[in-house]
Amino acid sequence: MNWYLITLSPARPEMLSQGPTPEEQAAVGAHFEYLQGLYAEGRLTLAGRTLDNGPETLGLAVIRAMDDEEAQSMLAHDPAIRAGVFRGLVRPYGVAIGGWPEIDQN
Image (cartoon, rainbow, N blue to C red; front, top):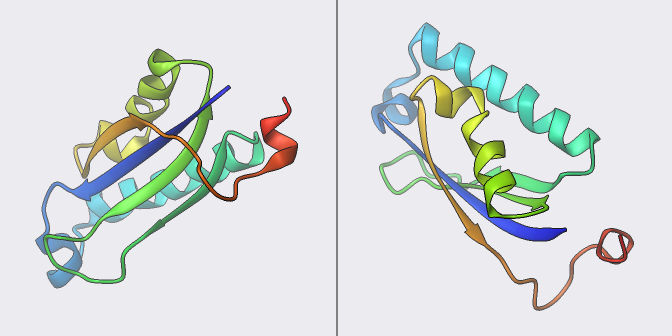
């Protein structure tokens, strides 16, 4: 298994400063449920976002996947990506300090 970093940004930054549309709100709720599922499977190690509400807002998730293709697939299946509410990018990630030893041994 390999580490990957997913970065997410809102497709419509005003969603954060002016509030989401009902469709955006539903997609973000489904996104959260999707991430909870990945966490329960042991595929997601952490997820969160910066606390600013401007166009520079950044969400991130650290995931484990067999390869680049699987990591891209995990992003592509995110409901908020599929709905066009978030834009995302997957990058291979190297943990230098910290991590989860019980996961690294698998």
